[in-house]
Length: 450
Image 1: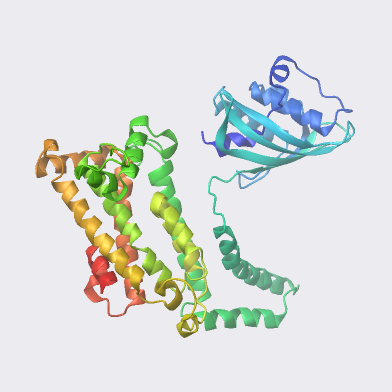
Image 2: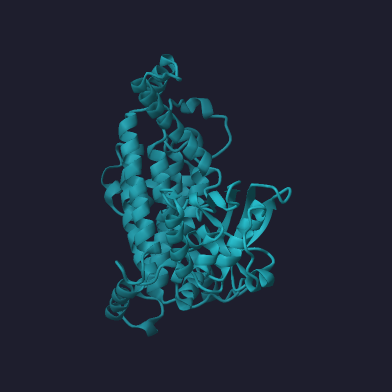
């Protein structure tokens, strides 16, 4: 199971050999540090009964992997049993640091991480707070905060900035019903006036659209990245990817935009030899990547995304595609549109797209690159390496990919989604885009060049 699931049983004592060989009995005079380390030692040998000797009957256990807290010893027993049965025997939980002052301490804070075969496991760090009962000397309260696998960086501040006004309004409405007003009425009026002044969509419609994008993003992550092998789509999830599939992904990334293969064709090997990738796979990969590449000018011209870390999220999206772009669209949908006078940015630094909200040199460069790489992708898919066969053989290979290879399925889904982003943004930015907005890929190339 994944690291966040296993992390809920915490870390184990750095005294690895001793903790596995000896069974300490918990006594009321033991410190919180002693109690928790004994519990970790028991979990590390998958001894649930021994671990429960450290737990008070009235325990309240909060694990932020779960929506509800675990109240009572029976609930914690079930948590421990599921955790111990669901993780490999070679996986250990290691305490890094602890805040303890002496043997009489009744509470302790700890940082910890998970190891597999002695090596740190990815995305498996955390921090916990524990408190023992003065009467029983056993664990009465616990809270685990587990490392998130998604590292949003500066985007997290943008999310807070977008969500905070919505939460504030909900709190004010609830307090008004309860007769408790902590937010002045003028503040609420200003909140509503700001939304109206900032753009064409109401706050409610923004929130609804944002929620729809979050749901779509969650579906994308689950179905294409995390769902079990061959269910509901073919291939393996990201956490169980086969070595040969991973090797092909690396090889395709090395052949990004056909730079190495084309250089090798002209006898230039200064950057090394291009790893071989079936021409159909490489053609589809580069077509999808170039399609996403050409979105940047549109995203920069978009008023609603102007206050977001657009370039950074697009950069990550070049590698994780719509696993990042769908959350970006959700954040964007919840971001109010502020009044904007492009004339005031004439002398500012940056591209024409980001300063003035219109096409400039960047758009033309991206359109030209898209036209060239797109044409090369089509050629590569249909004609490169005659030894793989003609159109029929390549079509059969593509069909096989769609029934066996999840990575290829994901790229096809990405192409379909970017077709939607193309039509939406082109119509939003240019009311005269016309039919070009609905001609996938090539319409975007031409529009950027015009």
